[in-house]
Image (cartoon, rainbow, N blue to C red; front, side, top):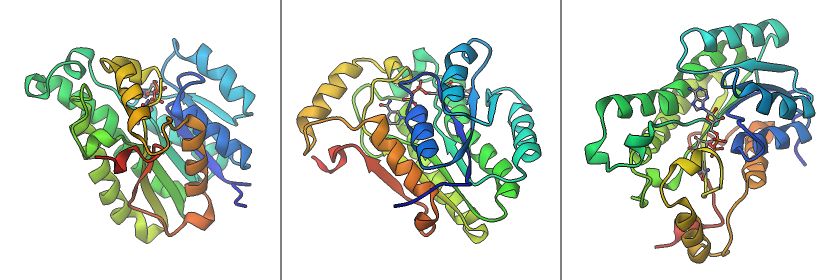
Length: 254
Ligand code: NAD
């Protein structure tokens, strides 16, 4: 099978043990990677630090991508500690509740812009900071959702945000390919996480998905972790620029 032994992986987006990023961090650690794990702020730290410590993370650092300079400080720290980086996992998204739960046509410029900045452009910034540390190649990945492709009830503003993320993944894959850096989007099916609780009637979306998927079940954070770990290994070096669904087949159904 594949191994991440000796690989240095930065995982951004662990909030708790239901986070998709937690499934990814665990899978990468199980495959042998050394981890750097971030927490949003002082309020989040007590929830994230014990999880990161349980995985023996080398670095446990703060990162709020909306705070100027925190991303650079993180990458400086990674540079000092490891001198390189092999894997970047971006598993974060945000939209102000009022904009998220209203119609897109009513969304505010401020809410739309903030959602795009935190959920999309932050991936650009992190990839740019990762590039010089990935001089021997690397793998970058971000989390999308099917609402990028089709209108999903109540996904609202996050539809255009994820569509922009997927287009950005293709552009970054094109930009960074010459440096042997792959860039992919993973597109998990609905999962009961903190971020998902901000989406109206999310239970209904999960139930509808179970009914409609070929496999009549939901994918899990472990499923996403397994795919992310594979994408991070050397065997996956020619897989780039994709949106890969991990959703028990939900996206193929009409
Ligand atoms: P989650 O709440 O566990 O994770 C979201 C993370 O975003 C949190 O760790 C939070 O701290 C972080 N975040 C928000 N604002 C930030 C900022 N300014 N700086 C740094 N971090 C910030 O929820 P999740 O469902 O695991 O979400 C992870 C990713 O997966 C998101 O991109 C989400 O859109 C995507 N996704 C989720 C689902 C789902 O159904 N849960 C499905 C497909 C894709």
